[in-house]
Image 1 (cartoon, rainbow, N blue to C red):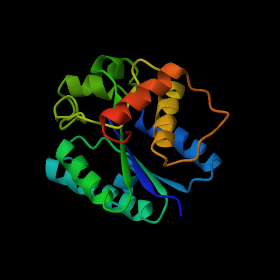
Image 2 (cartoon, rainbow, N blue to C red; image 1 turned 180 degrees about the vertical axis):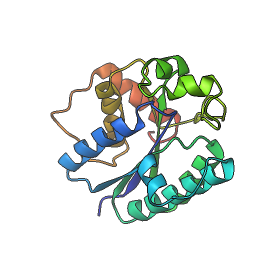
Image 3 (cartoon, rainbow, N blue to C red; image 1 turned 60 degrees about the vertical axis):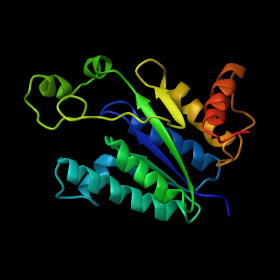
Length: 204
């Protein structure tokens, strides 16, 4: 049985987590990898209904997502999570739990507040910046970026396809998904992914 893994997207609201998770899901299914997406908004409606946005409730929500992701991954599936998960300590706690039986890959969707405001069709960031929305992550609530993510997607500057390619190449180099001979990666892109994984101790 192929080794299961968790692909954990983290980043501010609107940074592209859900978009990329769906794109990755589609590509993995094409390669025969069993996959489930745990989207933050959907989990809030079902698994975590009734929780608020205090730090304690946010941590509880992430622990629940992490528990389901761990169950899926230890049974050979890929569990993709797309939740803000603002606190580094809880993400690291989930990582440690998952790594007892499966692999954990953190994908940070990095995007500036300026860019998020620019493309926010609902105007939530403008309201939060004006003090009209409380407990808004990245504005009135903290967001702690990961220190050593396996993948960094510069979603404010690059296309979704470029981010997708980097994620898939990372998963290939970690031997978590089958390689796609038809996929096109530049030598520069491969070298960038290889250097990050080597720095993190995945490659010799």
